[in-house]
Length: 277
Length: 181
Image 1 (tube, rainbow over the protein chains, first blue to last red):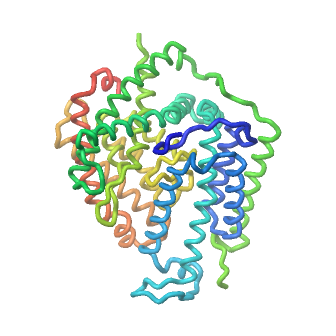
Image 2 (spheres, rainbow over the protein chains, first blue to last red):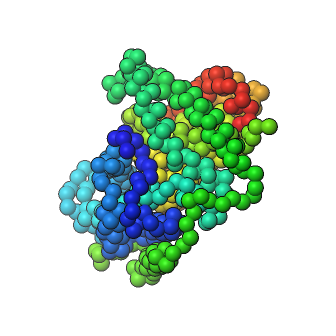
Image 3 (spheres, each protein chain N blue to C red):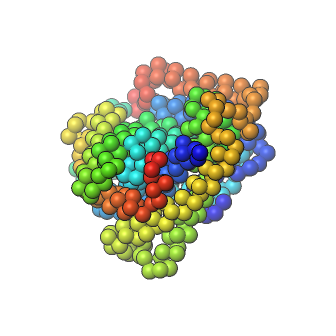
């Protein structure tokens, strides 16, 4: 995978790669819901460790996803800073106590409660981002289309999603090449350029990008037509796999973890685990 | 007879990728950066029919929901969709539909297209802010200060840019591309 590219399927023979795509999709959705709803630090920490272990087991090297990870890390950090800037005392209101670490200007004091809340946000990133990357990197797009169809998404939409996944690297490659070509022609797109120049430069990329996509649309639609795509209400899938006992085991774990996440509502008396009381 | 439905489906998929790529495009403009996300949706709503632009946005949201880092800041997952900023994302569906609906294919004049894009952007911002208010339990004033006001100037710039580029593309793209849209 090229340095500047988004993500695509990386074939391998690990346990995770061999799982059914429907299983992986449902597992990812279940755990995303579980991690989204709770702010229990213990649960989120456990989930973060599990996510990182699964990532390690998938044999995906960090350099294969370094570009995307850097991008995500930058915006996640930006998000954490924004949370503090907009609500510097949100943690205080959540945990009903105030332990000042560093006295700041006005309401911008650094409190243990705010740090703890933001630590929970970091754990949320660590528990869901590796899972998201895992699902995308270990699932064949055709198999993904079949799995989306199995969980009730119409096969035409499923196929469109699979097409999009398959062609993201191609379109990104086009985007990168056009960008380089336009910069070589003198269009300024760096941070040094003025806003109007950068907008004009962006337009000079979008136009050729859309036109290059037209050729691809012609080719793919002809190929699909020749294969009689869309003639029937239902379709079979070349890459579809049946569910194995290991798939049911993984789904059971996913459901179990989601139930634990919801049961923590009663244990903690809400979404938040409060160590300050 | 050529199957235009198949071609339209592929156009929708390709346009969803276009939104995904432009969503990662950021131009710093003061405290709030301009992201290409709403710009791309405005552009696609200008080019395609209301239904197809809505389907395109749905595919884009589906790509993000299943884990592809296609949302602004390379974020992904169902957590983003139902998190504090999820309202903006879900509002994109309505933005695409309304923008496309206001633009009559017979009358793609600059004023009409710009008004359509501004209206779409406004819908997205308002619905996103309302969602933000209830998600974070903010007051209305705080919600609009955080989720609306900083994005207004950027939203106007992007709506106008999407309109201008959309009209230029409408004139240059082959009719067979747009006729079935």
